[in-house]
Length: 232
Ligand code: GRF
Image (cartoon, rainbow, N blue to C red; front, side, top):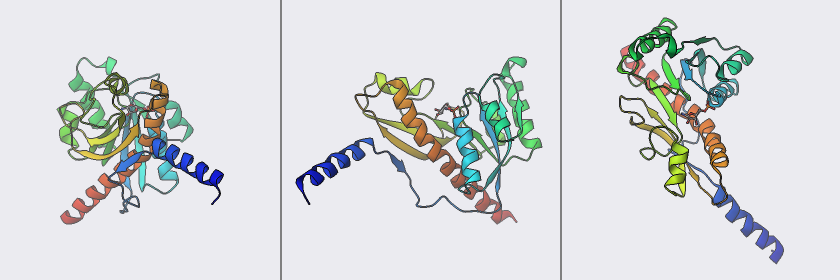
């Protein structure tokens, strides 16, 4: 191999390694199960994760259908994505309810009325109460932009920058009462580089979120199907 080519490959290898993100656990294939799982998606913001769930279904990477998108924010962009992909959606604005419990009950009822089997919090900027957690035990999951248990709560990406960590990432986990504390389903690690701004880091983390959330949904769906099989 000539020196130029060798140097080129070494440079590119180190570049690739620096940019590389790690997903764990990483099964070679998305878990398979039948029949398709009925999802309810909760979102408050841009809905990019929501969109990637839809794309994974369209690409046959995820055996699911989205029964409903529930948003709490009437102006969120996730609604536009629901319209674009013809997914049913409902706005359940928390400001219309006196208590968190009442809002939670309304959300739970909607999900139950539609026989939703698995609830995905994809950028749901609300703390959910026991009402929802207890009704959907082992069937309620959340995506968070850090390697939990580090940097729980709001502005996790800024928290990671402030602590000068060199690796951060994202986590999909089951939801329990304590915020961002339930069992971890899957994580992706993302290196923080000196040149990163909060915005570039956010983009890198979101890129990994879009990969791991559909994988996590498939994993949990498979568990649900396996457990149900025993009851038949
Ligand atoms: C994601 O970064 C997620 O980790 C956090 O909220 C963000 C939602 O982004 N919980 P989007 O609305 O899916 O684009």
